[in-house]
Amino acid sequence: MGSLEEKETPKVHVVVVSCHAQGHINPLLQFAKHLAHVGLQVTLPVISSSSDHHYRHLPRSLTVDHVPLLPYQGAETETETETETVLALWERRKASMGVYLKELMRCHEDGSKRISCVVYDSVISWVLDIVKGFGVMGAAFFTQSCAVNSIYYSVYKHWVSVPLDKGWICVDGFPLFEALDLPSFVADQGKYPGFLQHLADEQFQRLNEADWIFANTFDALEPQEVKWMESHFPFKNIGPMLPSMYLDGRIPNDKDYGVSLFESNTSSSMKWLDSKPENSVVYVSFGSAAELGKPQMEELAEGLKLSTKSFLWVVRESELHKLPHKFIDETAEKGLVVKWCPQLQVLSHKSVGCFVTHCGWNSTLEALSLGVGLVAMAQWSDQPTNAKYVEDVWKVGKRVRMEEDGVCKREMIEVCINEVMEGEDGEEIKRNLRKWREVAKAAMDEGGSSDMNFKDFVNQLLGRT
Ligand code: UDP
Image 1: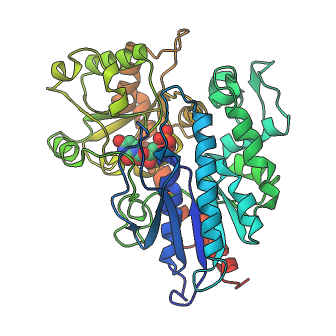
Image 2 (image 1 turned 180 degrees about the vertical axis):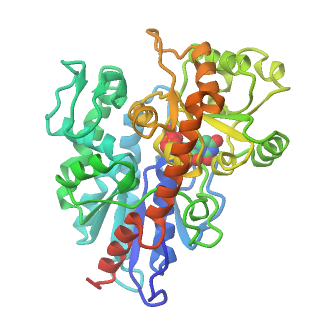
Image 3 (image 1 turned 45 degrees about the vertical axis):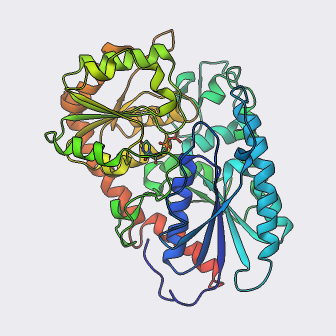
C-alpha cells in the first residue's frame, strides 16, 4: 500500500495488539508497518521473555521497519506445567496482558503519544473492553479467512447446528462443507473443549462495538464469503499481509516479517536450496503450533523417502523426537531437516517446486502470493477449511485425505507431491497460481481493493472524511 501525500503531518498514535503466536504476530506486525509507512505513530507490544517450550527465541530487534516494539513481561515468567491446557495459558496471558495494556493506555491518555486507536487481534476481543474504557477507538483484526469467519459466525448465531446432523452444512453461495472441511473446533468439539466457544462466541459478542473490522484476506479471493460477511458486519479486507517486497513492493526493504519466535537455520537452508535444480525441492512445514502424532510423522517421513524429490523439512525442536530413528542420517543425500527457516525466502526460491503444508492461513496466503503449489495436510483449527479451498475452489493444490485412523498415508503423500509437481493437474495448478499471484498483488497495489480499504481507515483516523 502506498504512502499518502501528507506523510509528515499526523500525530495519530495507533497501538497494534496481537496474541502471542507467530501466525498472529506476522500479519498484525505487517499491518503496523503499513500504518508506519504512511507516517502514523505505531507501537506493538510483545512479550519480552518466554519460558514457554514452544517460544524461546526473542524478537531480534526493538524496532521493525519504523514500528517500535514494546517488550513486556508476560505470563511466561511464571512457571508453567506441561499439563496446562492452551485455554488456561490464554487466561494467564489475558491477565498479564490486560494489566500491561491498561497501564499503557493510562500513560498515553494525553500528550504527543496519545493513543487514538487500538487495532486488536480478534481472538483477544476482551482488549476492546479495555480500549473502550479509555474512550479510544478499536479496530478488530481477523487473522483467518472470510470463509472460516463466516462458519464461526454461523455457529455463534446458531444458524448451523453442530455437531452436524446432515453430514454437511450449507451457507448461501459457499461450497458445501462436509465435516472434514470444517474448522476442527466445529467438527470435533469433544476433542477441543472450550475452543469453539472462544472462537465463535468471544470473537463476535462485542464486535458491534468495534469501530472497524479488518480481515487478512482480499475481496477477489473469496467474493461470496466476503459479500456474506459484509451483510452482517462492515468487514474490510486488507490482505494479504505479506512483506511488501513479495507483492506491491511499495515499502522499501520490507523483506521479512521481522519478529521470529523461533531461531531460524537461515544460511544452511538457503545454501542447501541454492545447490538444487529449479523446481526440484519439496518444502515441508506445519507452521508454529501444529503437533503431528508419531504415526503421522512416520508416514510423512516414509512418504518423503518414497518420493524421488529432494526435500527441505521444518521440524520444530519440540517435534524432533517423533522422527523415525536414523531418518536424518538415512536421507542426508536428498533431504535437509531444519528447526525453523525463513519461509518466505524459501517459498520464493527457484528450486522449490511444491509446499507440503498444514494450511495455516498465513502459509496458504504466502503460497498463493508466491506461486507455489500446495500439498495440503491440514491438522486442526481453520486448516481443514483452508485445505478445501486450496483444492476445490482456488485449485492450487492437492489435499491428502486422512484414512479412518486419522493419518495421511505415505503412498498418498507421494502421489499428491507428484501430481502437484509434474502431474496433469500440475499444469492447471501452475496456471491458477499465476492468476492468484497477480490478483493478490493487484489487491495490495495502488488503487487495489485492500489498498483502498486501508486508505479509508487512515483517512478516517486523520479526520479527513
Ligand atoms: N514460518 C516461518 N518459518 C518456518 C515455518 C513457518 O517463517 O520454518 C512462518 C510462515 O511464513 C507463516 C507463519 O510462520 O507466516 C506460520 O503461520 P501459519 O498461519 O501458516 O501457521 P500457524 O503457525 O499459525 O499454525
